[in-house]
Length: 410
Image (cartoon, helix red, strand yellow):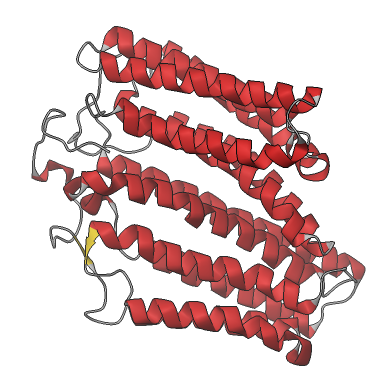
């Protein structure tokens, strides 16, 4: 198992990576569904902590595999089998989402995470054995992941035995999560891995599309339920149509500027870009839950107030617009969207739900979609779209050659 070149031409995602992503469709759907259930029952705030914790496990497992595959995807039998073990872990984690959300029972989630992480440790050990130049980095990754995984298991054991108070569960999670984020930074201080910028940008784009798809699926399921409970109504049509327009606008905004070229030129900023996507991805997942509840309330009664339903859509939409700007601006020349447009859009999105008691949910959702269309339109006006760091147009992996020794690293 040797490292792949950072400037490998025509590098794209392999079929195994696409299959790997399919298991995350199940996991994300489970997380989104539980959050939608909490929002509909009027317990949105209580459901946020389990949502962010489980989504972190999903996102971080996907992140680790993606960056490893960008450096060491040999696609041999051992690599494929270990990747499939990680897929099995994702499905176990997804099965444990209801228990984690309802009863704070993280046993299945911890077990699924354990399966994924042990397989990843085996991959890093293979890389250490096969790549002499990157051995120290690979061993650091393996050691860091193994130690942190022991920490997650210990946290679960202490929680089950009552040694770890319930109130200390969240601080313990935050501490372990921070240490998880520090492992790549610590491991790559010795020698950076050979991740491919255009491959990474494509993989992030594919996961973004999965999250958009989850939003479409959630809204579609809610439409089906509303139609089963009542006839087609005006509010149902307005919310369903507005939700679709909203997703189209945010998709357009995300893919407005290719990220591969910027990552190639500013590799040292990839930590901010890569880690910042946790918020971008979580916002899209939460948006799907909010749209599902907004559609559902047109067919039958739910406990959530109109203002809460609208905020369940407005807050994720505003978070996406702001976080997208924050993570993409450092790797491009200028801004993806003008800061004034971002601030104005976020402010408008957060104020619109206050009108829900007077005008209803449907007009507010339509207005939220309108704001997102407006900010996207402003971004694509002639001369408004930022360029990658080089000022070039289409990305070209062949444009220059750079060895791992001269790369800045993640």
